[in-house]
Length: 505
Image (cartoon, rainbow, N blue to C red; front, side, top):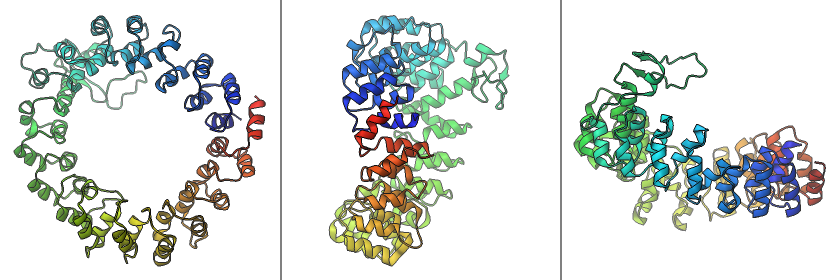
């Protein structure tokens, strides 16, 4: 019964009276569904929050509760949610900054636009985790001040903050102009020198695997530098020297930066770590010469990521399509192709190239129709979901290529009901077809009933509004809770059944 009520909470067919009745019996799970209802009134939102305290946070984020509805002493987490969105009241921040629950002070520290006195109090919080959270999100002037904080964990957070002034970030990278950090999370808790066991058996230990300190706070300093190298606000002059650093993590951190000189990018292109080269391959800042060099990389992930580069030359991309598994996706360079380039791609003698352009969903009708008759099943499979294809074209695809294109044809938004039914009866069957039909807007009642026979399609079919109401009602007794919730949320569930189910509670 509980899963039924959870589904009913999201059912758009519920009357306001039935929503009120569900609110009166709601628990955390039912409240989660009710909180997302588009028709929830302000009075109902307040009543739901009073019934289930935890729902007040979601209601605040959904915009159902406003500052006028919230007492921060009763619903501190909801007050934090509004402060997080910039619509809370300043006096709430002054109240919550003294909250004995550290997690709430951390949440407050992440809020923007706090009063300056609250920021000063948070910067002096006795728990360094609160100060670090402030450092991660605060304004440039406060971040610059916290860059010299005696605790290395705070400095690590400052290094990740993109609002931190460039001079402070450079100092964190080089260590010049800053006093040495005096503490870190490791030496706060352990006698040094200490290296945290990667297989630590202590259930209450939250130190990261491999965290270490010999008095220089080396693991935290290393992570701080990595964060600063990834931070686009860190001056490039302070980071280029790390392209040959012995640390793989620090070299890798540079690969996605878009301000590196080409010479530094070239050094990273020969990095022994495939992940570094893969991040570099997708970096919009690399030039054509480097793109062409990376196209011959021995690692398939590097070549795959290069295919996603927004400026990869088409001749390089078509070469990659022949040698690399790119997947069924529309690549940025293909999406940006000119009409002339689209024509050239569509008429290529290479099916891998034609398959790239077939992923577009805005092809001119003449090109779309030409690709629909393509002799290669991979091309037709990529094109099959394209809107505008006729029933005759879709049926021809199935006749020519069979099971290889069936699921993609079923995914076509213009596939007519009769075709969907025929796809379900195809021999041999393709199970993914059932899932596609189950969520297709044009699926008929008989097609949806057939989809119920497939375990993975069953939940989607149970929630489809074209499913016959008596069948929906029967599914409320299903053994799969996902099917039960989907059926209960189905707007075609008869109102008499809904009223009876709520009335039992």
